[in-house]
Amino acid sequence: MQPLLDFISQPWHWSISGFMIILVMFLLMYSGGRFGVSSNLRTLCAIGGGEKFSDYFAFDWKKDVWNLVFVAGSIIGGFIAAFYLTSPDPVQISENTQTYLQTIGIKTPQTISEGTGFVPKEIFNDMSKPLNIILMILGGFFIGFGTRYANGCTSGHAISGLSNLQLASLIAVVGFFTGGLIITWFVLPNIL
Image (tube, rainbow, N blue to C red; front, side):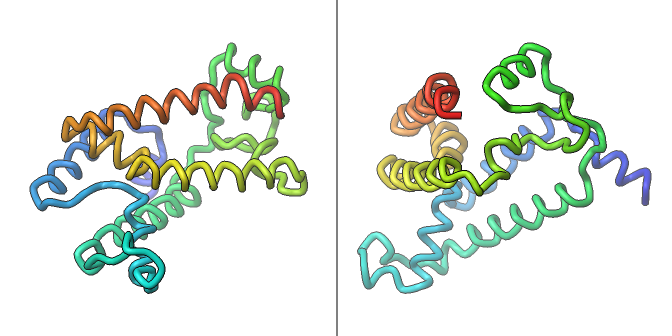
């Protein structure tokens, strides 16, 4: 059992996840389903009686229960990966990236003795700073607003929409990435 766990906990080639995404998309297109994480929130709101407040939630949510199974599987899979399949080695980050992160006050796993994750503790693990709380709330608001305004989330547009050659999804993905780059390069360094 241990050799199998050792094999699973090692980083896999990106083509394996790419193949799995293709397989899921093929099965969804074959069955007429739509892929997207924001669809799950809509389904949850419909189950909770959201149609009383908005017609947007008035649909047959029982046809989309598979979406909830997908989210549950993502949560369970993430838990298993985080607690049972993590590699003890630090994340490999290039020297240039480490130098840049240090200039904006973020330590990398190579520069500190503990911690091997992808999430910088300086940003997300210190919720005693009011700025971090404000950033989380604002980020959540913008993500929720953008998801509804774009009629889908990043995964729905980038994976499902682009694979169906939808122009609206291409425009949305260009907007998502442009916004992300602007925030990463121009906003975050000035507020951290």
